[in-house]
Length: 229
Image (tube, rainbow, N blue to C red; front, side, top):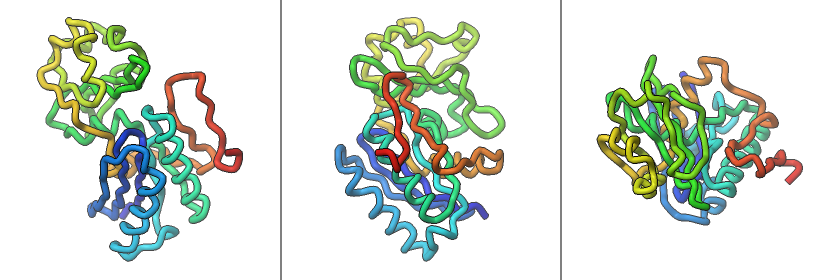
């Protein structure tokens, strides 16, 4: 039975989740700029309600980005600190993949897009395969008008997910025509990340806390280990 704690602060939403086998509990709120005050109390509540100790878990998962620079740093730093204290590995999880996972396997092809500010978006296209979303392209950051998918990826309609779809009027018309439904009011959530981390653990994707890094996609942003901050 996998026991995984997951954390996410990559957007205006703050969430934590605890997966114990097939039992999943979580906390989720949308409160911008309060993540540092909310995240660890959520963790304490989840562990106390389940009656489990932090050091009895198998791993700590976290939303590694892309997303808010400050938010990703909070989740990464918290995951590192908790994992080091409890001698646990960590599992970084893509925020874009977490959004796709939460939509469910029956949704077919997905285009997850997050608002990256500065008139840009983070995005990736996905198709379900072997029980999880598989990326059709690399995760990218660009202007909405520059989103481009290989022609073979546009053979079927997409579901559009995420805050970046507020820019749909700036996206290529051919791309928008292929989107059958848009759900802009969805966020990455720790509950999805816990489930993805469970699969990743079985595939050997866990790592030492010191090796964990956020994914910004914008190259000019550097990350320092927790003991260097």
